[in-house]
Length: 324
Ligand code: PMV
Image 1 (cartoon, helix red, strand yellow):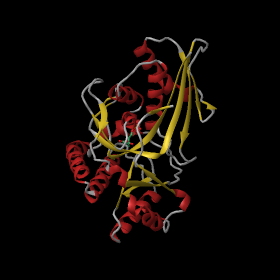
Image 2 (cartoon, rainbow, N blue to C red):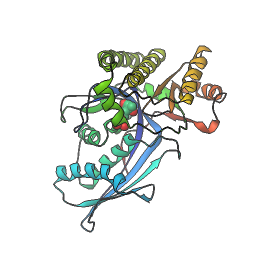
Image 3 (cartoon, helix red, strand yellow):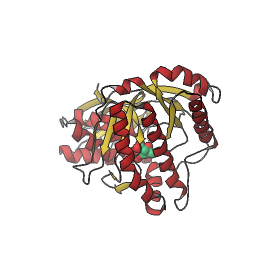
């Protein structure tokens, strides 16, 4: 019996990963830059055993059906190949995210699974190689290996596509991200399908690719200079551009719901009062507000004029992978 356990935190991109150059290897079209957060995480234990005749996957103590297990099994196949191990595995994951928040995170989930496998099969992977492995499970998972600010170097191959920490002199400890949880009845377009459709059909996608390297360079300069307003402005603009590409896809789609717009407008109004805060959004209706730790209480109070207190969750900078 070979057993490993690990914990990984979620990350939110300030410069988004949007589009794959290689769907199988998960090589992205552009570099991305994220902040690892403390509030949401996954703890996973994996046990490879001769007694198992198939892979089994429990999420929050609920046995998952075949569809839910397939993605995990595909990832385990990669690991089995790497370790030259024929054994099936039992995977037990606990997602520490508020129920029904729509934040079920593939980033923390696949990063925790990769690290648990690394421990169970004694692969002794470096952080870089662990990031490469997590990437194969879910692209954004490669960034959750590291704490604080992280850049995913898109690379051109399995070898050269991995995340690494961005030097920041610990500035991330002065920042925060307030999540505005928005319930939405719409059926989701997965990030995988959304990316594919956008890359293949959106007239705006070339504009995304042309301008994102400059956004990333500017974000790194802002981090180096600890210039919050500059980083915030780039973050917001980059997110709006990503979401703009979806409107020009064929058929078009959007992750915005009426309440997403309400949240974005609230952030702009709060900013106009002199409180520095900027929004970003991912492949769903929730809005995340980047701000400075010193302003969190005031911004939470302002946001409470627009949303229920239960809809607001504040996260701070979080750690990289930990083994349990
Ligand atoms: O790694 P995935 O397949 O969950 O894709 C993540 C895509 C975005 O969240 C929209 C952007 C990002 O960089 O995290």
